[in-house]
Image 1 (cartoon, rainbow, N blue to C red):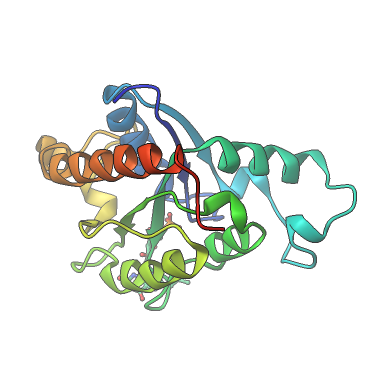
Image 2 (image 1 turned 135 degrees about the horizontal axis):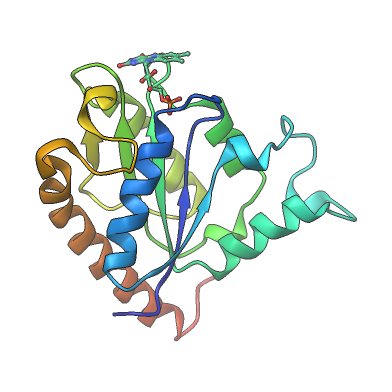
Length: 191
Ligand SMILES: Cc1cc2nc3c(=O)[nH]c(=O)nc-3n(C[C@H](O)[C@H](O)[C@H](O)COP(=O)(O)O)c2cc1C
């Protein structure tokens, strides 16, 4: 189904983040599905550590409103999590925690990565339970990317097309949930 709006939420706030390549990679594949994508990059967005959530702000600054609008418009979320000490980057959790109802009854899909051989899978599993708490259940298939430094070029293409091939099950499954939940949301949501 075309006309899906996807927010790609990148995880890293490091200036020399590997995550840039991964978000280019995911953006390309999502666009190839005909989806409209917006990348939310914590480094560029530069939110302070959480004080008031978006709901609690009386006059939110433009940067908070703009992310709110992107999340509210989205039909689903692709989350990119590097592994930091066996969990997700603090900038990703911080960004996610600002919002709540914007996520409800929409699917999420997890891409995790690390410089090591395990593809950030421990961060990915933590993120799955966070997604559940936020009301955006994560699809079963994750896309773990190991040895991230050596696996992609700067344009976000994987070396030898390895990850483009691996991503197809991930994207097809996400598409199924996007359509299923979008159809169901037209009938209303429980709260
Ligand atoms: C604070 C910190 C903790 C890290 N902890 C882990 C780890 O537990 N396991 C792992 O495989 N890689 C770990 N790494 C390596 C990261 O996965 C790797 O640096 C990756 O490129 C980070 O993503 P980014 O460049 O987009 O920020 C860690 C990196 C940082 C900066």
